[in-house]
Length: 181
Image: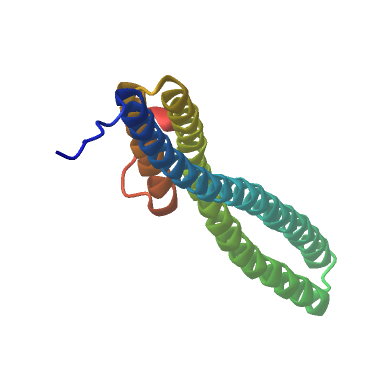
């Protein structure tokens, strides 16, 4: 009768732990990719928010300069009217009207840039919290490998799912969470 060698229980357990470790390591790598995408979105949102604010501030500065020029023209036209310089008064009034029109365009552009800034400001916290949750997921996954703990790994999955949800929401803004703003 042939002799059958029974597998060593210690070796079976070791193989099972290696398989668990490899799978968790692969999932952890996926978490790292998601974290990189989240960080990229967060950095873009921050940069765009700052850029939009700077551009809006520039537009309001131009608006203010046009207002000052308009007031100068209006003041000079009133003085020309008082001195009976009709031709000069008409030219000055035309100049004031030009600045009034320019101001409307600048105001429209500034308000558009402020809306853009506000949109990026609303997106930024989703990326921040998403990054934090994905970092926590990576740490929990690492701990689950060291401890060979399935429940800790499930905790990392939960953290990663929420972090990924926040990252995707940061890009598409399909849900607004009130305490994030």
